[in-house]
Image 1 (tube, rainbow, N blue to C red):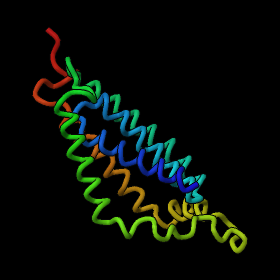
Image 2: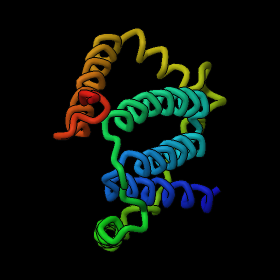
Image 3: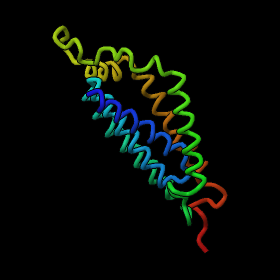
Length: 174
């Protein structure tokens, strides 16, 4: 279990490096899929199986919509791949920052893993992740609406940034 969690953590960090270092939405989407899979795998390892499944499906569905819009509006003739020199240099800089963070925070990480979500399951009537989902929709409804508006605003901001001066797929056809 320990090695599986380390594998998920490494996948999460490497996926974040791919997303941060790649300017093309085509190849950055691959990094987002890796990040969502590794993050949900970490949640499963900690005991949140239902919430992990729901987040994985919702996140991948939302990411698919954003990827479709951004790739339609940012149609690059020659997108930069993961092996281009600028992307490799950015990846090495980000990996160097990650290694520096590991060196600085080395003693505080894997010392005490804590208790998983289902750690005290014999004392509880409901699982922790199921009770959290019901509380999110009942008590946190207002915050959920604010989060949905923020995601919609983020979608429009990303589309404006990605569109650029050529106006992407919305340009006039002559």
